[in-house]
Length: 433
Image (cartoon, rainbow, N blue to C red; front, side, top):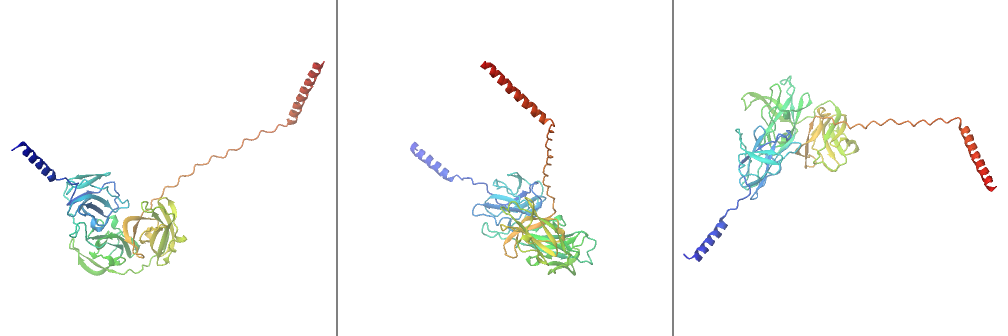
């Protein structure tokens, strides 16, 4: 074979090899990933979310929607099953008041089955060192990127009527909620504590989620059976039917419960001061904060009228004093159109602070989504620094006493002047001679 032909063949082989080279793609991922919530994130969250994007049109459902909810698999560790395809980026977040979230995570090579640990904006993937719980995949349609949520989100206030013949000597009432999003909180933890409306009625604020069941219980071991929870039950009262049902967890017989409409409870009138913590990331360029309060006595004042203007405590906190009355709800708003959702108001909230939870609820008047609020204890704002004590006024120096010999001084001065004149005259006459 001639050198010329061999050269042509080698050139052809090189060209074919060039076109056959596979260009490596950017980091891509599919399968199950895990996330360890950083220790420095605020712990007042109820859900952890995984937001993702990728190639071939892969996109997450709505931000922090039910379809992005992760499954708790160990203390502080959550898992999420990504859709089939090449996911190229992730963000993990929680629904706490601080709205904590990671930076974009794009180092996804070999991340499947590993735990994302966060240090600042840096994500490191580590192998699990203990057995993790099962991760529930989100139900998806056949089209990549389209997600069907596992249940309709519901939220609102529910109530429980105390069975006075059966529930005695208890101190705390709890509400356990669960559904397609898992458990709202751990059994009889602080987040499940209900609010006392009166001696026979307690209330509980249910945040937005795909909830399906509820149980009320107390700290003496009494509880209802598993009771269906839907959007229709929001605003209603759970009560004992008098029947017994089997507890599916331990097989014991517990009291059956059902729902009925809420009758306006007869409560003692109350009043006091409440506070509102300004959500700095959301409320900007406002001048006035208002508090709208209402109940069985009607509205305390007209919407955003002078009677609703709040008092500024500091840049982050406003207060509002409520006169005695039969009040049931409150809304804080400002003059730029921002407002909280309808929030339950009882005597127990007097002296407390309303704050944003990070969730959205429907405005029953307009149907728009507004920010959900809840109550927390008030931490007294630091006292404004006292003005430095003013220096005592310096008293003017007393004027020296005028001498009684002023006249004598004048006479002496006049005599000296006359003497000088006489001397000048005498000297002048001598010069003429």
